[in-house]
Image 1 (cartoon, rainbow, N blue to C red):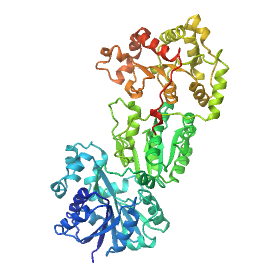
Image 2 (image 1 turned 180 degrees about the horizontal axis):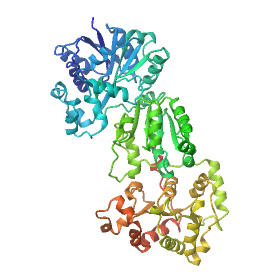
Image 3 (image 1 turned 90 degrees about the vertical axis):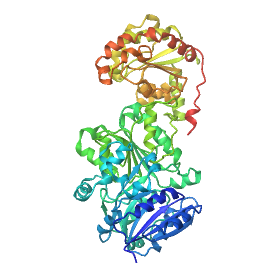
Image 4 (image 1 turned 120 degrees about the vertical axis):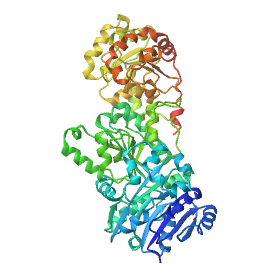
Length: 619
């Protein structure tokens, strides 16, 4: 009888499983049996076992269940029941154990306690190229070797080769909470059997949370050995995409998406929720946002619950702590931090979740289980702002690479009727055009100069007989008035200066009835795009146009000084551009883009155009 039973779950991935088996053949502690729990549909795994069992130094047994949707929980329970040892280690067929993997688990066992280790995800290129020699020499656990192969330098890399006293200290200091990890956990067989094994009615990652909670309710303790019990997780792109499996995998799956920045950022990040609902139709999504941005989330069918981050949380530590405790009371499968600042870092720390994803920052990477390098290259499918948000899904949806989805605002029938009535009172005739002018940016750095903006307004008014509305905040009224005063008399007669929305949601309703938005790029422009309203945006020299402009959409025109005077931006970084913003704006005169503006006005502000929203309807 062996001291330890190792249960390895797998499903039609013999190439990876072979590497895992060689990893177990390198163990420093060899008194174990290995049980392969296969939810499969072919004979490749059986053939591999027959080939390799005479070449390794441990006994292998094979428990098989026919692939019928998701059967992992069922096959795991059968494998555990068949085991001969009192102590069980559970892992997966794409996780290669470090040479002291079994030794660490076995020597640290305690009564009524489960141990959780770490699985370090290797990129696809290293996963495929990993050889038997690399496994035997333990190269895949050496930081220097990994970095030579292209792994970015990160504090997280220390998890692969920490040992001895250093690993013990790091185990104590890690902020990751104790829990069940299906890639790397161990415990007593009798404790598993007391709670009747794994719930065979719960598929995919949901069984992790459910199993952990049952153990906790039974009084089982958890021990975290994140820097001692180590395996590397091989990346693969072979996840089934059948509707049946996707639907099963989504049961009880719960996501927390965090975005507390400006209106445009909150709106842009909704595409994360929209894509998650596309991939997992039955999942639950909670969204954390600041209270002044909630209007862009109303009626969104892809968000199940909005968690409001109030202003007082930023001003009162006690209120903040109370809020964080409310987050802690929830239990999420995955946390996606699209904000990446101190407040969202704290939310991520307090959130109970085994997967926490954010963009890579060297100083906060220790908080998250997965970090994603922000792409610096836009493509012709979407803006860079949308692309980098959707890339946050890569750790949990490795095959997903469609970044063509864009944000969308959702209005109820009652809201649309109200908006039409309110706007109808302004018009002399029903077909009169309504044009919103975004005359001010969110800051001086992002605001087109007043004397130039007044010229843009004059050009617009000279080439349409529509009604002009100014978009500005109440505290910007004096600045808006200064631009109005610079306009010619014809323009002033067409501008309804005092027509003002009383709330952000009311502004969205009015904007939905506009034929076009012209002016400074920013939150208003992003909302217009999300409503399908054509836009003509003037980008600040400080902003990278590709970050927020989708070049594939013909109804949205983007104007940037760099398009006309690229020589001005040679050897100019953001810091220098910010310092010289006023001198750069002096080159950015309306004469540069007047021809493009006239074409835009002729197309959208004189004759009704049919806007193609087919892209937004894809998901």
